[in-house]
Amino acid sequence: MYVRERENQWILSCALVLEECVMSDKQRVLDALQRMSETAALEEISEQIAIFAAIRRGEQAADAGRLTSHEEVKQRSVAWTS
Image (cartoon, rainbow, N blue to C red; front, side, top):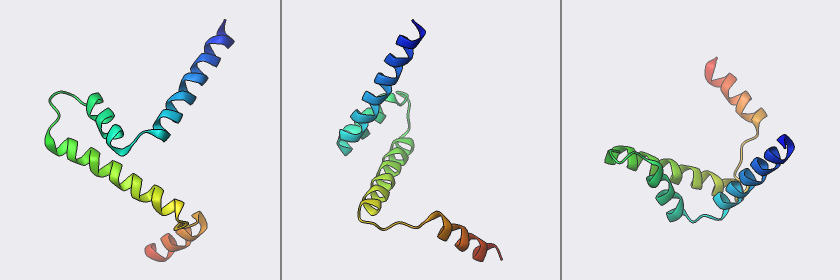
């Protein structure tokens, strides 16, 4: 029985990931709003939308090939701290 439960959990988590991939930006925001407290302040809501926008810009940059390797980031951080 334990194996079956683990399989069901895995299937559910895969379905949630797939759903997240096909959600529109509007749907992601609406979903986040539904999970927020009824007393959420406009600042909290605005911050959540800003986070989604930043993530979307990062995804678009990655899709366009505008990436920085881990090694390059390490080299830059050494230069910043010395």
